[in-house]
Length: 80
Image 1 (spheres, rainbow, N blue to C red):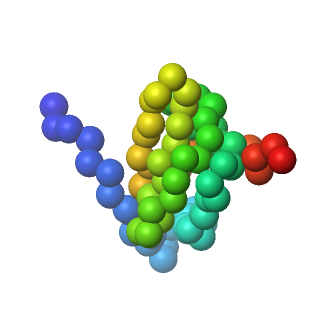
Image 2 (cartoon, rainbow, N blue to C red):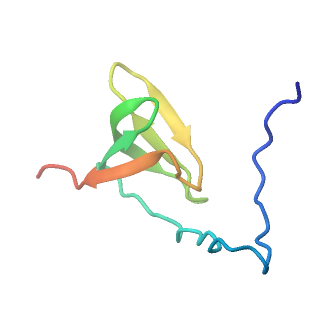
C-alpha cells in the first residue's frame, strides 16, 4: 500500500461538479483563542514572519502550524 500524498487535484472543465475554491490565507494575532481539530483548544503564542503560528495548548505544549490552516479555527480575540 502506498502512503497518502497530499496533492491538489486539477478541475476538469467537463466535470459536473463545481471547482473547489481555495480559502484566502487566514491571519491570526497573538493571544487569539483557537481550536485545532486534533489538539483541542489553545491560544496563539506567536506569529512568525512567514505566517506560521505557534499555539500554546497549555501545560507547556507548543505546536507550530503552517499555512494553510485547514485544521485550525478561530474562536475570537483574547479576553481584555
